[in-house]
Image (cartoon, rainbow, N blue to C red; front, side, top):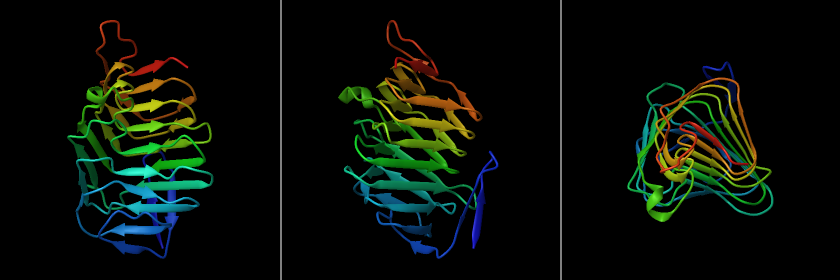
Length: 219
C-alpha cells in the first residue's frame, strides 16, 4: 500500500502495483522502473483507470505521449511521482497536445499529482494547432492539476492548455512559460477553468493583437 501526497494536500492511495518498463494502456496501477523513450502514442483504452507512478524516472518523446480513446465510456489517467525527480519531456512535435488529447466524446479524466512535464521543445504553430501541452475537447472531460510542474508549449491558442469544452481544475502545482497567439498558458473557447491554487506564470501572447499572456477566455 502506497500513498502519494501532493502539495495541495490531495492524496492517491493505491495497491497491487504492476512494475512496468513501458507506457501502460490498460487499466491498472503501474510503477515505472526504467526511463522510457516513447516510440508511438499510447492510447488509454475505454472503461478503465490507469495510475502511473513515474517513480523518479524520465519519459522522453518526439510524438504525443498519450491519447484518450474516443467513444462512449470513461477513460482515466492519473500521473504521480512518489520519489521526486520524475519527468516527461516532449520535443520536435508540432501537432499540439504534446502530452495528451482528451477527446471529443465520452467521459475522459486526466489527473496530475506530480512530475515535471516539459513541452518547451514543441511548436504547434507550424500545424495551426491549439494546446501545446494538452487539449480538452468534450463537455464531459476533466483535467485536474493538483501538483507537479508543466513547462512551456507553443500553439496558436493556449500555449500550454486549450479548453474547447469540459472542465479544468487547478488546485496546486506550477504552470509556466506557455507561448501562443492568444492565451500563453490557458485559452478557453468554451468549458470551465477553476483555479484555487498553484502558480501560473510566464505566459506570452505573441500575436500582433494577442490577448491573455497567462489566460485568455474567449468562451
